[in-house]
Image (cartoon, rainbow, N blue to C red):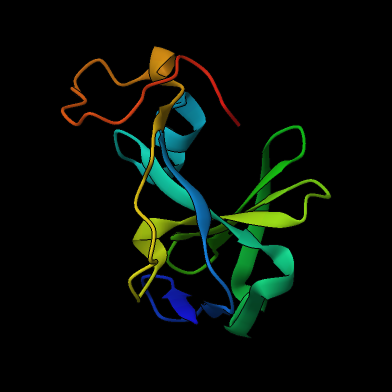
Length: 131
């Protein structure tokens, strides 16, 4: 079990399974949504994601076709991303209260990387995907 929450504590959830496909995304939308150089996220099976409280506080915004970013309507914290009818959710690693058990494996969308940020690790870099 991996627990997560928003900054104000109004939204809490748990993931009853392992996370996968951890990555750092440097696309413009992720940078703006996080207010940072990139977003670190992993995938969780939708069937293993469980709201514990505050799911009514989560507002979803369709940032691109089929990509719904959920954030706390009180504090603005990014909580979860739903990808259309996909069987998995994108979970921001920074919102997790427990060790996720995974580490980012690669950098994606580095063609859109912030010009003021330098990637200093040895993880593979992709100009766009993989998704």
